[in-house]
Length: 171
Image (cartoon, rainbow, N blue to C red; front, top):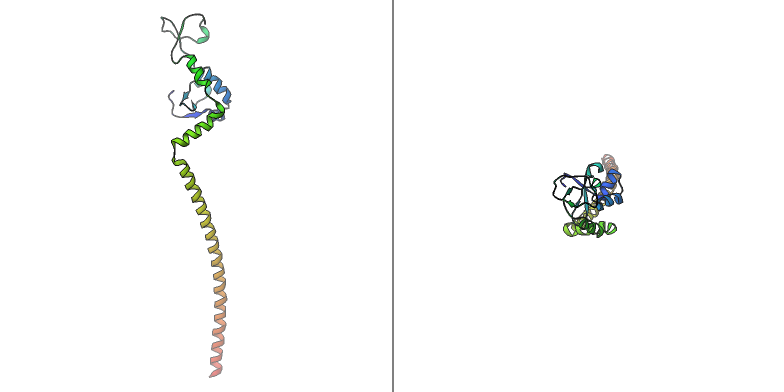
């Protein structure tokens, strides 16, 4: 299936309002086009009606394609593609409850930097919080220093005025 963008069953379900169980059932019956990467099923990002396909069926000795419903089941058929038993066994070994956990585990195994990135992000956030606290403390100290400076300046003016008045009196 060629596509520019594919969605997992969960993403497809959320986007197009089709239940995951319906998608799985249609995949099991080979009613919709899909890809399977060994872990997860992928569907093209297009409405379900565009994914539904007819299973190509030919009569033995003929190259004509017919809808499966229009063919007598007792008549000799030849299907193009994987056998139905192969598809069923692939779907049967698929466990929807374990699928997401297995997928995430394999993804983590394929991307070993992910835990390191998470640790770096956590350390960066902690460092940022520490720096913010330090900035807040420094701002409080600046306010205190400005207040103290005003007090010292006013005391200096008083001392200077007293000193000038003494000098005048001493003469």
